[in-house]
Length: 491
Image (cartoon, rainbow, N blue to C red; front, side, top):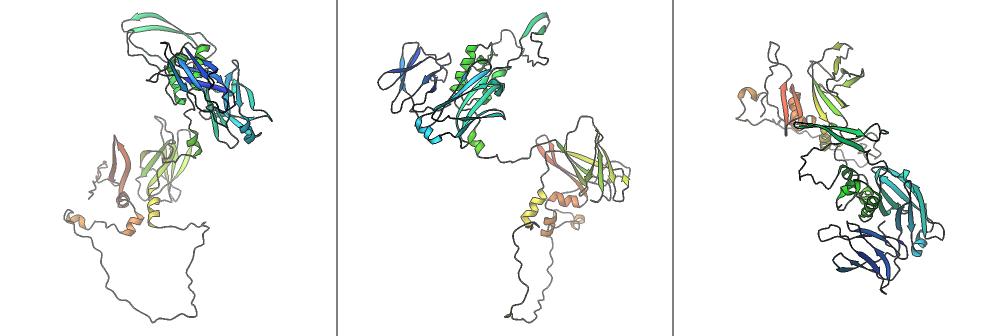
């Protein structure tokens, strides 16, 4: 569980590595107290991992002496135990049950009394919460749990104190129903550059199986992966530290390999699940979640107003009325299927139906309301439901009011003109639009001004890595009915 407590028996993990971080198997390891009395012995696996039972006493320092294959020895101090805390251990009983044990000391018991702790068994959002309470006058508590509370693969066991703060954590692995059924593969024949193979499923109880195939030359040396599909999906995402030869734990699994994996998880510390970030609150939401595809359309019919409606019919016989604003409409969160057809009908204010000429653009996610943002920068609007009192100046006269004589101010009218631009032809000079503050308020963007002058503006178009805007006239200039549009000139 990560805690070493004075006068509280628990299990201590061992990890012995070389200078490069790879595990080293030792001949023997021993723990001695200040009186040079041996209090524990341990060994390590081929990956340098081991464990031993340990009950550190208050005020006593301990050292570990390690003996290697070449006869050399090394002595290292063991960390000092904490004066208060809870030791947390997990042990498998059989294929169906496991035991969790919590032990503490007298100093801690006086603080926690009989308050309730919680053990959270969780993984990827799936969680079971188990209440745990130390009995009166007892320094330990154990619970036998069925492995049904565990999910397939990795499980994170986090112990929370009565204040809801995580104080210990342990990773355990559940092999139950993890590995797929065995297959029998045989080669039938070889034909030129092809192999005919036969795959036979030995376990017919499972109707659905997942298969993956990797084809390489027989004498290749390039395929020496230390990870397998199982270790990549079931082990690596949950462990913070380095894992030596991860696929070892999933090939030809034996009880010994299960114990080796448990040693690995015990000595890896807390999982990648960072509780500090969780308790900080929800992360900032910088972008809207993309839920389907938004279809933004433009209507080219003459005389269309916001009082008209657009009726759209979907392939599943659903129909919707769409609002029209500035000859544009929006279908949000649509999930189109290849080959499907949408049918549109324009419903005039007088209830008459009309054929509609439209153009559709695709947008991912929601369309931000940029105009509203610009308005807020220009003026502050008062909410009708605003609880704050609005102070209105009094228009009543006080007793000491002084009446002034009438004053008339005369001034010549100032004319606002646009400076002549020599780059603009004379025949276009009268068609220029001066961008005043009022115009900027009502039409915040250049594209809004162009659109208000009778052009269709398509924005947010992606061509490869380049964003483009297409501007074209709504009315064709060809009398022959073709698609020739006058080209607007932008300065």
